[in-house]
Amino acid sequence: MTERKASPTPEQLQAEVEQARDDLVASMSALRTQTTPAALMQRGKNAVTEFFVDEFGGIRPERVALAAGVVVTLVVLRRWRRSRRQR
Image 1 (cartoon, helix red, strand yellow):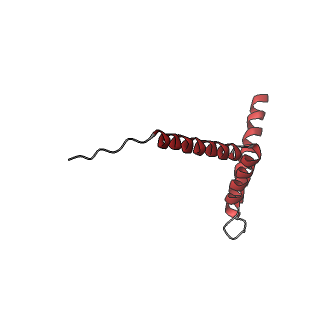
Image 2 (spheres, helix red, strand yellow):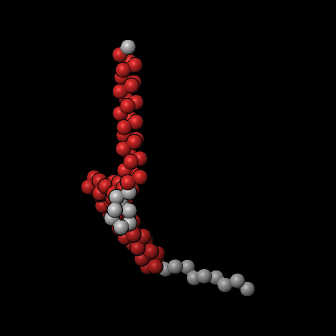
Image 3 (cartoon, rainbow, N blue to C red):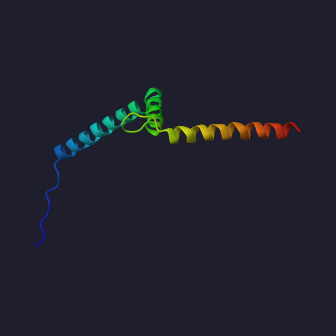
């Protein structure tokens, strides 16, 4: 035969709702803290630092060269486009 589970009491339901509410408030607070401008700036800084620095604290020259190449290419392309417009 199948066993029937006892229905939760109103007190148990109230406790579950309160626990869910507390969890939601904690999650919203953590999200608010993580999305402040200062926190976002720090995360961006950490991401850039991790890209250019290896696990031993040394600079990764190949990545620095890659970034420099991208910047130089963008500057050259921008100047080239400006010069073509002026003609």
